[in-house]
Image (tube, rainbow, N blue to C red; front, side, top):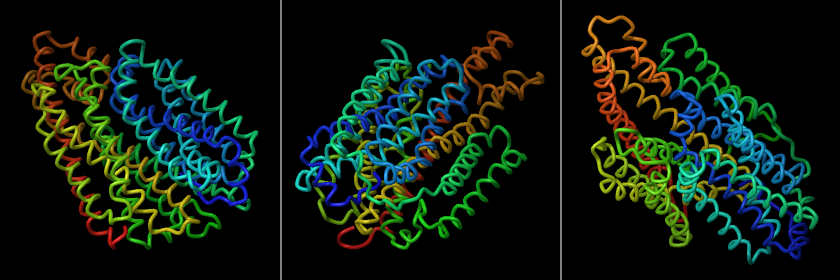
Amino acid sequence: MRSLTIAHTTASSVHGSKPWLTVLAACLGLAVATYNTTAIMTALPAIRSSLDLDTQTLQWVINIYMLSAAVMMAAMGRFADIFGKSRMFLIGLGTFAAGSIVIIFAGDAVMMLAGRTLQGIGTAGIVSTSAALISVATPEEKRAQALGLWAGSAALGFALGPLIGGALTDIVSWRGIFVLDLPLLAIAALLCLRIERSGVAAVRSKTDTTVDYLGVLLLIVTLGTFVYGLTSGLEAGWTSLQTLALFSIAALGGIAFAVWERMAADPLVDFGFFAQSRYVAGTLGMFFAGVLMMGALYYTNLFIQTPGALHFTAFHAGLAMLPFTLTMFVTSLAMPRLLGSYSFRWPTTIGMLALAAGYWLTQDTSNQTAYADLYGKLMILGFGAGVCYALLPRVGLRGLPDESAGQGSGVINTCYFIGLAIGTASGGIVAAHIKRVLVGPVIENLMPGTTGRASLDLVLVHGSQSQIDHALARVPADIAHKLRMAMQEVSDNAFDGVMEMMTVVALIGAVLCAVLIRGART
């Protein structure tokens, strides 16, 4: 969603070169990226079992993808300005495909995380150039329709991802999700090569643009150390040297980034944009929307596949999430058309309140809850997520001049992906804290005076499935059975705690929208 300022002479030169091929390539590449963002959610339990991942590493399967996409989003837009949009779109497709291949052959966590990192970088390349490609390739009178298809393909990828991912996981393997990427990406790449021959590849909106490499590096250091500190802090200790060092590096990196961006000739982030309350509302709102998205896509999805709860298969979990994903899809397409140029202040506030209501209603879910009691709540969440996802970026961009839309959109996208990563990490902190508080007394009650209780506590809260099974195999069978039953109730409480956290975040987001979004056309 970068680099939307295009020279008129260039745009007119490519209108006769089958512009809908460009639209098809851009939409197909974007659909693959968004489909992968949600398809993996239904496959997480299978991935965890197959690669024997502990809780923290499983979170990083999501976080490293979100962070690499967030950090590279603005940089990829700048590369597109310098080297050409279709060329960078091709590189994004190729990088994503390379990540998928690495994941297909992954035998351990290292390969899995490496593949997800490549996918995140590829996503940044695809997202940051696809809308710009459509803008330069389509006549002005058809551009709104083409960009509508582009937005719809993103929403459709998000909506169908859990269902397709679940089906492939159950029928073939979780690796099938990433096998499917390859032919789709190949088709998009072949179309893009045809586009290059038509002259779109030569399009550059700013020939004098430079890339803020130091800004990219500082952003990587800041976000990486902060999120790693969050995910490891509970296990290592919040006052441990490791955690304090990580947060200190993150703080120093953030300060250095802010100082440097104000000095840089061509910064990644123009802090002058934040003088407008609407832009602050758009960026912060999308950050909160990212956090809130993970409450449904990550934590609710994991819960409904948990043994002892609904224990759905991956495919059934994908079906179970359709009330959320399809409601979000329909809402995100309908809202901008229904509201037109009217104020978005109260619609976005209502969207956040719908998320708060949905999460509050979901927080009493337990392993005895039937799915019939969930799907209505998922629809409420889908409505709220769709409103926020569709309107908040427009709130931020309405206050910017056209020539700054590309950079402003890049920052908004970056905030959204950061929110996705923070949502995963912060929910994990809440869940792990609740588990540690509740598991200790259970172990003490069942195994009074036994040595090694602390290590058993740690394994039950943070360990992989094989580590948990190995630890329980070393205690008497009757106690192991009671521990497994107790852990079901502990998991219920942990899930409810995450839902309560999401409720609070949504309420903060509602206040933010009501206060910061002002004016008749915002």
